[in-house]
Image 1 (cartoon, helix red, strand yellow):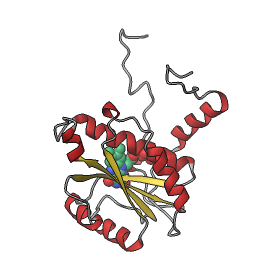
Image 2 (image 1 turned 30 degrees about the horizontal axis):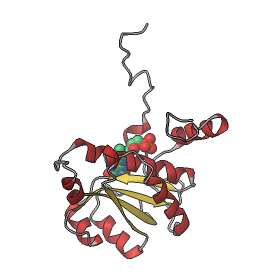
Image 3 (image 1 turned 135 degrees about the vertical axis):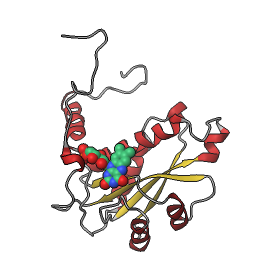
Image 4 (image 1 turned 90 degrees about the vertical axis):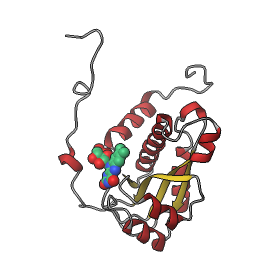
Length: 191
Ligand SMILES: Cc1cc2nc3c(=O)[nH]c(=O)nc-3n(C[C@H](O)[C@H](O)[C@H](O)COP(=O)(O)O)c2cc1C
C-alpha cells in the first residue's frame, strides 16, 4: 500500500512506463490541424484533477476550447503561442475561492498549483499520444474577454493540445538538458 493512502504503489513495468513517459515528454510546438477527440480531451482533464494542490483545496479551474474561431483569437493575443493548437486548456485560478480559504492574491501555493496541474496535463497528453505545450506569454485581459471568464477567475497558463506534426520551432535554448547532478546538492556533501 502507498503511504497509508490505501492505494497500491506503481511497480515493475508500470513504474518503468511512468518514468519513460516523464523522460520522453517534450513540448510540442508544431501540430496538425485535425481535432483532438473529445474523450481524449476528457481523459486529460480527468488526469488534471489528480494533481496535488495546496491544502487539497483545488482552486484551479480548467476552461477548455476546441472551437477554431476561439483558438484563432486566443493565438492572436498570445505571443508565446508558437503552435496552431487543435484545442487549448486554460488553467485558471479561482481568486474568489482562494480568498475565501484565506490565500492572499500572491500566495505561492496558488502558482505552485498551476504548475502541478500543468505538469500533469502535459504528461497525461503525452501518455495519450497527444502533443502539448504550455504558454504563459499572453494578454490576461484579452484571454479573459475571449473566454468570457467571470470576475475572479484568473487565466494563469494555456496548454495547447494537438496531434504532433514533424518539424516546428526548435527547442528553446537548444534543448539543453541538465543532469540530475547539475541540479542537486547533497547535505552533507558527497564525494
Ligand atoms: C512556466 C512555463 C512557461 C512556459 N511558457 C512557454 C511559452 O510561453 N511558449 C512556449 O513555447 N513554451 C513555453 N514553455 C515551455 C518551455 O520553454 C519548455 O518546457 C522548455 O524549453 C523545455 O522543453 P521540454 O519541456 O520540451 O523539455 C513554458 C514552460 C514553463 C514551465
